[in-house]
Length: 392
Image 1 (cartoon, one colour):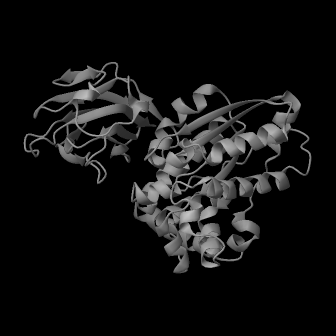
Image 2: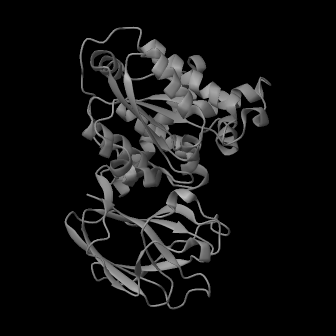
Image 3: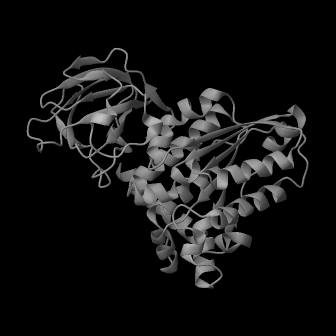
């Protein structure tokens, strides 16, 4: 771990000078790396293409994503596209790493992949650089392993903190972490955070006109135009075949690069229930995309469940609501440790988030026991598990 932190610090310094130096000041705050001829060749030679978008609410909303889809359809009018919209509001790169398999790769090989989590890793996750790398590198390495030919575009969307850091001559932790990954894997970056910060400071646009964290049509158009300019330039030269992208050494050996969800089958229930919660009877706001879905859930102190898995990391994708608090976790029969389920946004919303239970385990089979604490605050004992995540 100490060696990793030293190595990460060295890479952070390198990435910082790259992001704040000449490269980030290139035209339209686009950092150009790698090739996009694989997607071009596939679209033109097969007449088919699969394009996926993974991120948080900015990707989920009717924003830049449909604009880019419209651009691609016009650019390749004879291509039949399968567009995958895999954005889930409030989720961060760790959740993205665990759900990549089910939400994206289960549809088949991906030709062009758009990825954004800089805002959510910053304001929702408040992640350390290490945690953000594990999620973000996990996504990139997993999709490049499963689809060696996939072309990737990363966008740093924008909030006020990301802009403030740039004004200080620095970059936010999420951008530092994602920059390490994009540089290591040779990925182009649309640095919308830097672009909007500069436009605001030059009085070309206001934060309100841009639309805030969830951009207005004008803000999304700026992003889509930057993506289109990147791809138009990259596709000027015709492709003559598929060339797999290089897969470098991992930045962090514990990145969630072989992650997915374990089914609830085989989970031993002792006071937990496996069914669709009666959300109408549960206080707090609720997003309908989780409606009709099966959960593992309990709220009585002492209730427990136990399951086995194979891998080096295990997580819970939960909805953490007003009645959530903490859970107790035992790995391989060890002492129970507290895991915080409740989020600062849980006060009025059943908030989707990933809770990492352990991520530096030895490879192989492990056993996890979850328990509702006996000493929890009254009315804050609920644990609702949407998915169990495992990384090998």
